[in-house]
Image (cartoon, rainbow over all chains, first blue to last red; front, side, top):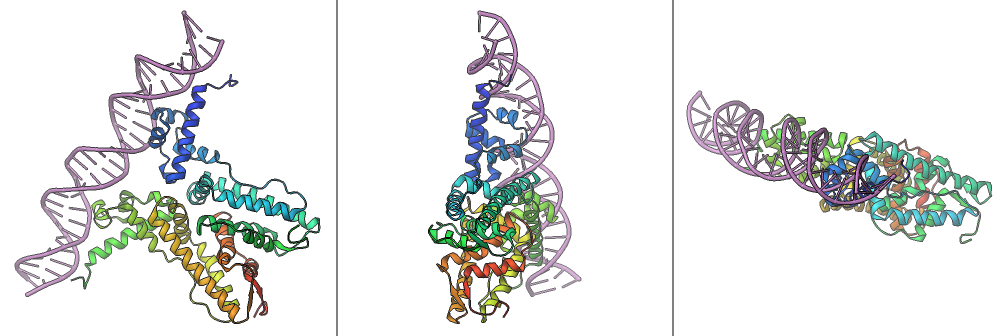
Length: 192
Length: 192
DNA sequence: GACTTTTGAGTCAAGTTGTCTCATAAGATG
DNA sequence: CATCTTATGAGACAACTTGACTCAAAAGTC
């Protein structure tokens, strides 16, 4: 039944989602309307309505299509692992699509419950993985953590958010070093 | 001439700006339309058009009406001064109006040049004052700065932004202490 | 080749946007 | 207090958007 999905449907859906993502990236969430998406996707307006009766859901699905950065399970030694992943996070936050989704999450969370949930999930996921990494580092004797671990995500990822949202510019390796330092004192060599 | 402005004009303008701010706070920038602002302000629709022919300008003016946080000129000893001001910044970022303007700046900067300018000005102002404070602290022998001072705003304010935008919650005094620590090593007493 | 489903074009009512006009009322001026 | 000036609100208006429909034709399935 749903074994082989109708290629017409997948084609339409993908064209629509791609168009929605483009519009989100270029002009923000308010540009993602049935009319504009249909025009951009070169698809009948009714087709957009058929698949997404409410445009809010279309926006949500378009956002879900952008792979948001997150941490995988940590590995020892933790320091180089973390360094690498913070670099990836910094670079991904600079990508137009990721940036558009991030700002939409931040903005939309203020009025749309569904987006609030999405934002909280993102923050929770990133925070949990980061804390897991720090815990592992402590257990491995690599790190002597400073202060409350619940503040670690804010301290280490906040600066990257600042660079991405408020003060656009590259994130130097030196800055990433300082993010690591904010977690506590590392007993491993600086460049292990 | 323009000596005594017509009280009718000021009354209308203020009612309109207040309504625009409310809508921005409650439903985001896309809710700030002539129709909705007029209804909220209990003012004729034509009146809104008369004062703000383009709704973009209305949004900008409504945002400009919200006092955004920034640092005043620093004073010695710098450590307690900075501690106090970071606390104020953290608290202000939690205010609904300030939060709404912040997210709008961050979001709107992606597509509207005028808002990009506003965002850059905010970042520049905050960054300059913060760096001035750190320079003063160094000159006074209070601080041994760690790394590039251009990264200081991201390191110290980024975490507050993270708490305000992605992971809502209170900012503890302990977290503020760690923000200070991110600037470098303070030679003054912890609680001077 | 006959079938089912998706599609795009189009219609429609309701609502929004931006512009204009005009009587009225509020404020300035003497 | 009477008169002049200007901002206002109500409403008219065309152009456009939104969301919901219908239906013939095209695309895909069997």
